[in-house]
Each structure stands twice: as C-alpha cells, then as structure tokens.
Image (tube, rainbow, N blue to C red):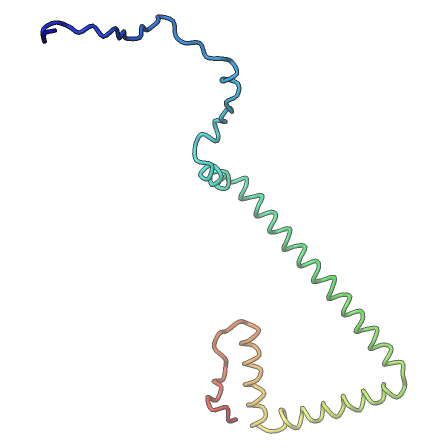
Length: 154
C-alpha cells in the first residue's frame, strides 16, 4: 500500500433515507400539555393576577367586611357588659343599706373634689394640667402637657 492509494476498510457511512422517522403516538400523548399561561414564569403570572383591579377591589371588600365584623363584635360585647353592670347596679340599688351607703360616699367624694380642685387657685391649676394631659392622651398628642420629673420626685 502506498499513500496515494485509498485504503479499503469496508466501513460504509450510514445512508440517510428520504422519509422522516416515524414517532410513536404514545410518546406524543405522554408529554404533558403546557398551558399558555404557564409558559412564562408562574411567579410573574401570580403577581400580574394580584395587580389587576378586580382582585384589589375584592381584597379591599374583604378587609372592610372584617373591620365591620370586628366592630359589630365589639359593640355586642360592650352591650352585654353594660347590661350586666346595669343589672348589678339595679340589684345593689334595691338593697336599702347599700343605697344609703352609695349616696353618702358620692356626696363625700363630691365635697372632696370641690375642696381640692375648685375652691383654691392652686387646685384649679392642677386640674387644668391633669385635663390637658388627659386630652393629649386621648387625642394622640405624642408630647405630654407636663414633662415628668426625671428624678421621680414630685
């Protein structure tokens, strides 16, 4: 053998047929069909769903219903508590001894309040400060009307 002569190794290249290979039908049906909605990232699809106005409106309605339910529950509970307190007060009021004691205690506290807070100018000033502090707490003012003593001496 020389270099110029082709070598015959009896290796033949595979012949390509003109017809395409036939795929079995079981392979085509066994593959799950992908929904066009899930072809993109499912997280972004979910975000897009929540961005829609209708979903926002539904969530707002749900929150409003929860608030309304909570308010209704608070009102019902407060009415029950007030009716129990009123019932207890009416029972105590029907007992002759407690009725007289309650009147004496109320009259004594009224006289004490007048003497401490209304009779003298110093007491009226203290009452004004306490009322301003109470208004600040109820109104939500973050700064109290009077600054507390840092040493706790008052």
